[in-house]
Image (cartoon, rainbow, N blue to C red):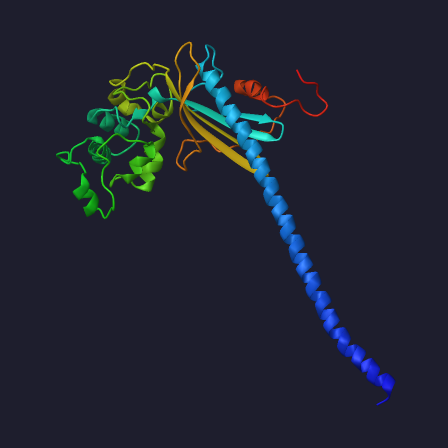
Length: 308
């Protein structure tokens, strides 16, 4: 073999490792670039979510001020209002807590009447009503017919027992042995712990009134008492299509002449009565919800528009 041929062969052997190193470098660089793009997107989404959350919190406070005012734009019957502000689709609802069934205030007969009137079978309504009473009463004595104290929970294979104290959240209804996921989905939106009375206002509308069977109207009417308009649930959810979604749930106490006081400030639970954010496409003929004009005051002027 000539010296030139040997030299060419050595160059060939050297070139292979060099190409392998270059290939590894390219692959590592591509992976790092992809990871960098992912991190940038994640950080961008996080910033957008934080900004959207701040806007939703502002909308929630404005809704509370609106409810507390003499001429509220929001109708506090749980019905959703939709707004489209810039690139945000917003859904807001308010519910007067006196229009709901209070887990702690309602008597056993009232629990049975309202649960039956809103669609539960009589037997199921009796069982659940008695289990509600046993959950909240301080003793360990089960209700005579359909109650459930610790022994009944154990017999149902549950690792917990009744609180033997007031309900702290309406979702605690899911802990009762007789409450299945189907029953929970049906009755939880009708419940509250912020009314505190053995009465309900169904004459003014609201979620319970919307569910009452006409044949059972009388069972609920005997518990009818006008609302005190003192405590309201507010849910605001906003979405920027393809970017971020954020929701806020609040309970606000209203006293004439005073600023609204928040009793609860949280993200909505999975079963909370929240209407999904719908994309609000304007056809030019629709009038925006009255609350939208109030919400728009929270946004800075759009580019090119003078500030007020």
